[in-house]
Length: 92
Image (cartoon, rainbow, N blue to C red; front, side, top):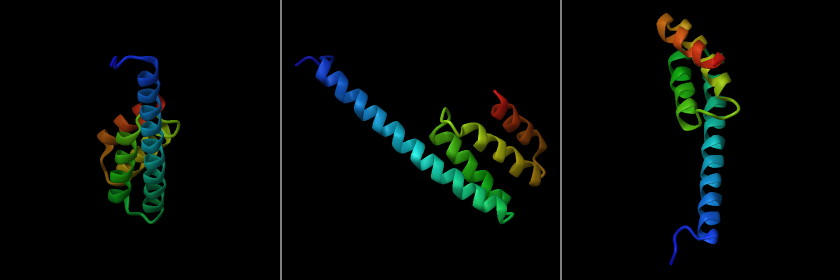
């Protein structure tokens, strides 16, 4: 059996695509949780959530927002150097 046959390749692609969609869905929910924590002034919890969202789906459509919110949370925690790095991520 040829692992690179068109049917196997197609199945692998679908599986990979579905897995990516699941990661983006989870990352989106994590971002939303982070925003809720940020609004409650739980900046440490928010920063963890934003980092989690970025690690799950670093190339998603909302990763720039997660990086921006991470920077704002880090500023509120007095972590200026980390905030600068997060801002750099959000604009690249």
